[in-house]
Image 1 (cartoon, rainbow, N blue to C red):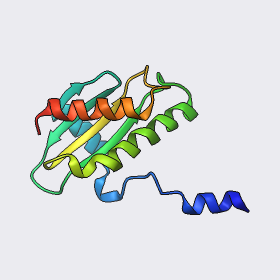
Image 2 (spheres, rainbow, N blue to C red):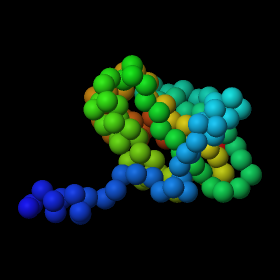
Image 3 (tube, one colour):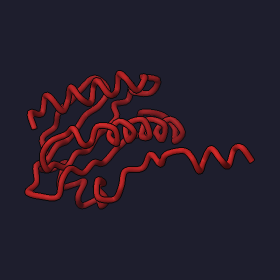
Image 4 (spheres, one colour):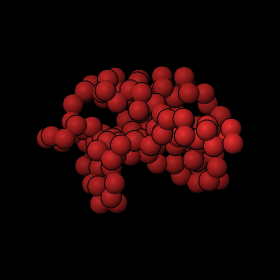
Length: 123
């Protein structure tokens, strides 16, 4: 019974639909026309757009590990995006790609890397 209570009180880590990149066509467009900026643990493609605010997509390849590891890394990245999305200026689309050696890195290091990449992008 206690276990069920945890799931209902736990905050949903998923980004709201308005902040997500959803289709393969959108991803391909950003890969093709966006700027690529690398960090220690993350690689980010950024494409400027006219309106609509920022949108994010998170990608982890099989190089990161099996499904459990990949999903854990994606949850960590989404949590950082949720915390920091209002601090990122402009109207941009972001694809955040986890590098293969990301698993086991704590959230503070990932957050530092993400913020360094955003600063490097000069948005």
